[in-house]
Amino acid sequence: MENNSNDYLKYWRVIRYYTCAKYKLTHAELDMLLFLKSEGYFDTSKFEEFNELLPWDKYRLWKMIREGWIETFRESAPGRVKVIYTLSLKCKRMLSSMYRKLNGEEIPTSLSFNPMFKKNVKYSDKVYRNMIKQMNETIRQQRHQTPEE
Image (cartoon, rainbow, N blue to C red; front, side, top):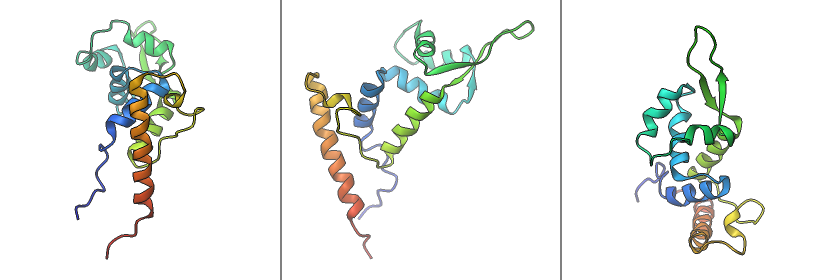
């Protein structure tokens, strides 16, 4: 049997969809936050470096600041032209939660923690929530299996 310890991306599509639905993000915004996670501190030129790969939205940075995903670390001042940004605590917590899901934590199926389980949702939400149930069951089964000797 093959070792699946590095099989992080098996449910990537489901986890990405859930994360975007829960936090009201677009896929492009999530991709941007994943890119910026390792940057620590960044300016608009670093933001624009990755933004060129995404669907065009000239207000993306300002929208992400307004929604609390990115915050100003240092304002510009005389002698310092560039504003320096960093990811907010809200963003870091969201990304941490997403990485836990990639590492095998179950996705919640309750209405209070997952908007995809409400009654009046899109058809695609219903399809994804069926996959979430299946994924959670697989995770539970893997957790209870004993290692082969």
